[in-house]
Length: 101
Image (cartoon, rainbow, N blue to C red; front, side):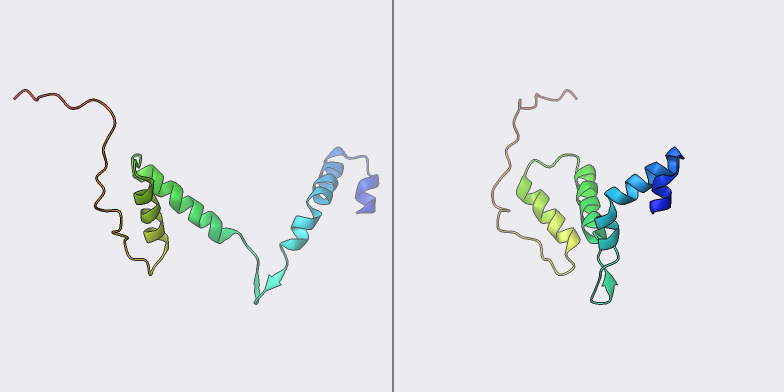
């Protein structure tokens, strides 16, 4: 690393600075716990599932339903919660007018 630092090649100096700035993170990526390396892949997967549910839901009005949907989709053993099912959802805005046939 000291020879890279002494070179006059700008690209090599940039790589040295990048490695020096991310040194702790790079070393931590090699820590092994229970025979496996640590990873945030599980959380990234959960975040993408939540984003997909939001995207395909066309806008959830009731947060409790959105939360239940996310929990149900991500947990294999989850059962749908019916505790708030009796509460009607009232949409804001104007009432629909009469239809012409």
